[in-house]
Image (cartoon, rainbow, N blue to C red; front, side):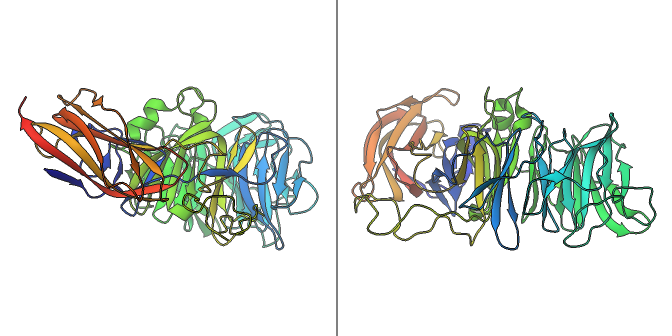
Length: 510
C-alpha cells in the first residue's frame, strides 16, 4: 500500500497530539521553515560589518539624505555603521543595564534614542548624541517613540515620582526639526503638547506601535488607541476590546495583516478590528512552557519581510539571551522553529554592505556540490532584510549562505503518530520515497519508527541516507500501529521537500 503525504508545507503543531494531526502537519521541527507548500531548511546566518567594540543590545536602521546607517547600542556607548565606516556617536555615556531596553526611532530625519534610565538623546547625522532638546532634566520615560509629527513618551517619571500610566507627547514638530525648549509644556495653550493617564486598567504601560492613523498603546493586559484629532484635545484615547497586552518592550511588529504581539501567555494578531490568537493549538504551549522565567523580558518580536515572516524571539530554558525563535509566515499561516545564537535584539531594513567577492574566479566550491550562485548579491539594498545583534558581540544578516557562522545547521522535521486512517491495524513500513529538491549529490538522512499505542514513543530504526539526484527511495523496516518519520540534513546543503510517499503493508490487528 502507498500513503502519500502530499503537502509538506503545512507547518509544525508542537502543542497537539500527533495522532490527531492532518496530512502534512509536522509534530516537531527545528530549523525547517514552511512556505509555498514546501518544508525547507532555513538558510544560514552570516556576520556583517566589523565586530562591534561592545556587546550590542539594540539595533535599528537610520537613513540621512546621503547615507544609510545601522545603529547599534551597548550599555555605555552607541555606534553607527554605513557598511564601510563605523563611528562612535556616544557623547555622554549611557548608564542603563541589560534589561533597560532601548527604544526610539527616526522623526523628521533625526534619530531619537531612550533607555529609560538616562535623558533621551538625539542625533542628526553629525557629531555625537545630544540630550533631547526641550526635555526636562528631571524627567525620565520608560519608552520614547515617534508617531506622526510627535514624540510620544510612556511611563513618565517626574522629579523622582513615577507615573506608570502616563502618555506624554511634545508639540507637533515641523519637518527637519526636533524637540526644543517648551515643546513638552502641556500647560502652554500655544503648544500641542499634552499628557494623559490611561489608568482605567491597573496594568502598566509597556510600549506602543503605530497602525495606520492610530498609535496603539499596549499595557500588560490591555490596549488603547491614540488618534490625532487636533485642538483642543490633540489626541483621542479609547480602550480597545479584549484583555490582551504586551509581554515586554519590543514585543510587537507591524505586518500587512496588522500587529503581531507577544502577550503574557499567547501570540496574537491585532488587526485594529479585534485580536485573535495565531499560536493557540500550534506553538503557544511550546513558547510559554520553555521561555525563561527569569529573562522573559529580553524577548522581542521582529519581521523578516523577504520571507513574509514574523520572528518571536525568546530565551529558551535558562538562557540569558534569545536562543530560539518561533517563526510565523503571514502568507501561508505556518509556524516554524529556528535556533538562534545568543541574540540580544533584531530589526529589519535596507543594508549597504560590501560582501566578499562572489565572482566566477573567486568561487572555490566544486561544480556538483557548490551552494552559491555566481554573481548573486545577498546584500542587495533593494529590499528590507532582517539583521540581528549577538552577545558574542556580533551583527549578523539572517537568511544568508548555508551555515550559521560556519557551523552546520542541524535541521530536522519529524512526524509521529501517523495511522493512515486506520489506527487499529498494525503496519509494516518498507520504504520512503521523498520528493526532495537540493544540490545534486547532497545527502538527507531519513529515519522511520513505529509504536503500538498512541502515547508511546516510537521505536526508531537505523537512519538511512537519501542522495539528492541519485536516490529514488530508502528501504526501511518498522512495524506498529502508529508510524513516525524524520528527515534531517547530513551536510551544509540547502534542501526543500514538497511531498513523500510511504510504502507499507497491513499485517493485522496485533
